[in-house]
Every structure is written in structure tokens, then in C-alpha cells.
Length: 141
Ligand SMILES: [Zn+2]
Image 1 (cartoon, rainbow, N blue to C red):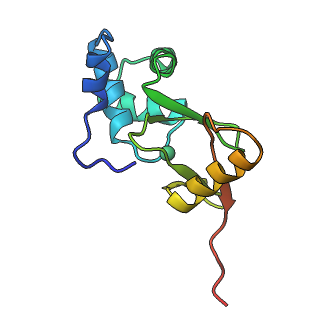
Image 2 (cartoon, rainbow, N blue to C red):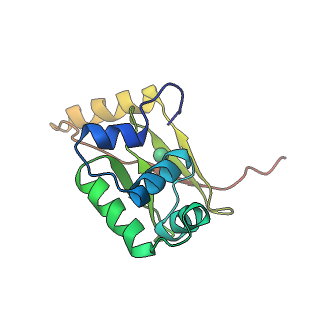
């Protein structure tokens, strides 16, 4: 979520024993610098601007590998695009702006607590969850 003082995705991948090729390094750095949850085409565009020879299939394979290891998160919002972000240190949820496609992160301890409470009342414990709020700019009245 916030990028202050966080371990770089590159370092995290090294720590998890991932083989880092020159191309992978660029992909990891570009994703790490992207706060906007890009899809594979967008990610490829950004990577190719730095490393022109890189193939979109390489980007795609790298994302799959990272997702398998739990180092990134994949999101499929209602626009049907599979988007990526480095696995966050702290859980957060998303607003998806239907007018602009922009994805905005938020965290509410109150919502987190309420969800736990409601699950408990139903006899469950939450294993994971994703909350996506589809929004548009509020019109001033
Ligand atoms: Zn996010």
C-alpha cells in the first residue's frame, strides 16, 4: 500500500530464492514502482520502454510465477482485466472508479472488525476476503 521503508519486491524475490534474470529484474522494479494495479499489457508497455526486446509472454509468465509464490496479488475487477500488485504488507481493500478505471486503495479497521464480528455471529472465521467498492465521483450539490 504505502511504499515508505518497504523491502523491495526484488529483495523479497531474492529472499524467496527466485532466479533473477536481467529481464525479471526490470519487470519486478517496474511492478514495484506501479501503484495503480496495472494489467499485463500495461505492465509490458512500461517494461518494454526500459527493456525494448522483452516479450509480453515473459511478463505474463513472471507474474504467474510470483503469484504462485504469493509474492504478488492478482485482482480481477469487473472490467475483466487481470491486474497485479506486489503482495501488500498490510491488507487493504479497493475502490474501483467506474468512470476512469482508476483503482484506489483504502483500509478501514472498522470494516475489518465488523467483518470478523459478523463472521463470528455466523459461526465462521474469515480466512481471507476481498472488498471491491465500485464508485464514481460524487457530484457536488
Ligand atoms: Zn491494492
